[in-house]
Image (cartoon, rainbow, N blue to C red; front, side):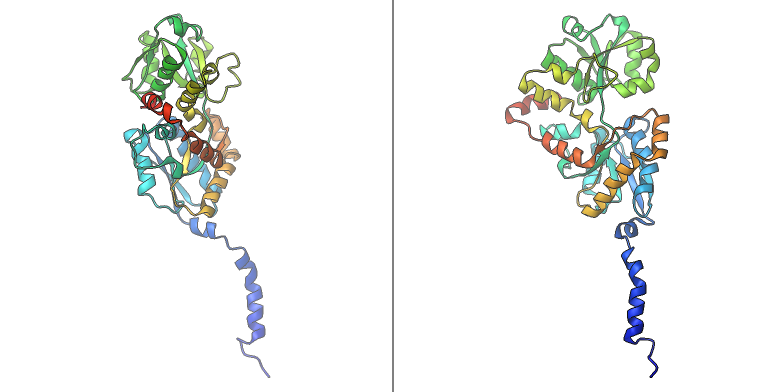
Length: 339
């Protein structure tokens, strides 16, 4: 008897032949194939938030299954809160939307100093390229030489405005460590503050150590600036510069200082929306970690003088959640310092 094309034997053979294809299917790759992953930036172009996110957009997508394209997009407004609110409330919750969040938002939310339409603890954090070491630097020609000098004479600090690290860090030092700095606001960014220091109009500036090395290496070589204090993860090449956290010995004051400098440990944090399926979040976190070891990424980061010491999404999540636990008695003072 001749068996037809749909006899059990033929069907069984066909099923066996299809097994490898079925076993090799990757739902994550299938989802991302042909799609675009958007990288939203809550600042204008040119700064570190923009630089790091554009670098990630060029390289991270190569490590996402399905190899989607990556498109960076600047969405400035309200100090970065406009983009964060859009990511939280409007953006697709499917793992195709990534945004870089201002690193002061978690501390500000913890003390009620952030009037925003998002909750930082409900974002799905992916990772940060590095943590930051923030310094307090003095213009050498002003006569400042050590941290203790800031307690004996009034030096002028240049700052952009309240809420910015150029303001909050020296303000915290005045409040918690007895320094006597006069904070002058209104400068439109770090370059203007640098010019003010050259003119003798400002004597002190808060700036990331990595930024000093990449943008003002000549000042360091010519000893035009003196690094008076540091905060955040200690810099190996600043072994004798005092740490603000270590100088703050009173337990309550230390909690306040930790809030002020928390952005250093968070870096320039990349996140995706709430509601992303766990398997896609894992794929994004894995892609981020793979990018941090990618030779092409590292070569470009080196050209940009960008230090790569990644913070994982899991570590960011744990740190940001822990940061929200502020004793009630400290909230009013903390809010005043961070607003």
